[in-house]
Length: 58
Image (tube, rainbow, N blue to C red):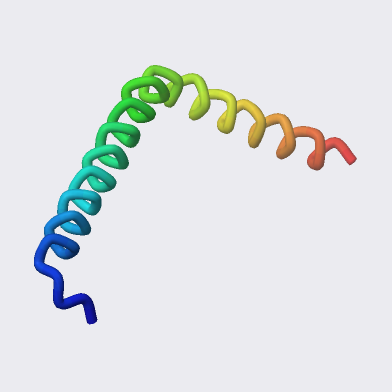
């Protein structure tokens, strides 16, 4: 174990920075991709209906 208290403080700050970077990255990705969700859902529905209709014809 590291007996140096400065090492633990440095690790704590590095961990906090890592958590903040991950949180901001996730929020940025969510804000970027959130407007696309309705289009993706519509494509999935249309694709499922198309597959269903094509299989039904055969």
